[in-house]
Length: 331
Image (cartoon, rainbow, N blue to C red; front, side, top):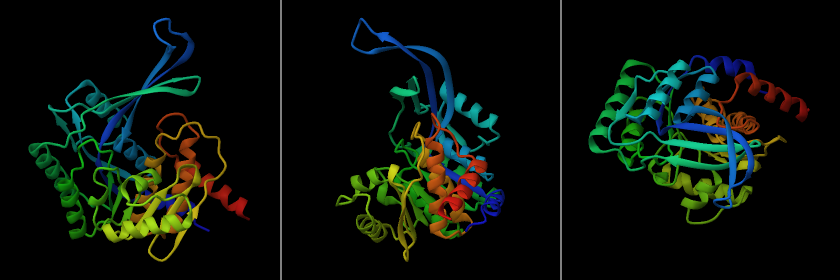
């Protein structure tokens, strides 16, 4: 049994460098009143509007909610959405010092329309081309500044294929991490899936596995062992954590491979669950916890977030309560 309170207390001494794609999550809440006479689509009467930090910025919120200090290095546009995202982070006491403003790209914004607690549609406004040469140089300079100015316990790559994490940037950060003996945790996407050589922990989901590997895997132990072995042969990563949606998580630390099933929950929204999982993973790796313990806590965190509507951070208090409930259920 883990001393969950001791672990959460230890989170408070950690500083996490998050590099990746930040975005703005916007929500329009309303009720469906009728079908439009103009087209066979529902008319939503909007009653409330809300914006929240998304992508790597939501990971920062998760890291902070767990008691650690997040440092975000990313690129936003010189637009209203970028300013709004910066304001939201500052209101949450997360520094925007290392956010780079670009005049050539928009701030990624995902707008979700919900009615009767169901998502009706989502529309995205973004530019997904890679950073240009000048933007890459500026981003690298900011990352170097972070590593020179403070002690970083773990580097977390949050990749949504929006153009911030290019293969060159990824390789240079991984090299810096190895030189400075800083562990690295990766939440990958399709484009740069095999760029994260020698990462400490690699955390894809099952869909990403099946998109990028030369064979298909189901959510069973034999298939996932084979998938993890293939990934490790390509990346030489020490640990693999694969999220399986409602089937739980799979972990492989090189010696032990297991699937941890999800606990029964009322699912409201799966958005943001992966952010919570990778946040726990990064903090666990920084504390050098066994991967089996990290997987158990990450599994609980991902499930907890799915009980809430919209992209929201994990709660340290609820995580501790969930873990203690799990221990009681297991007897």
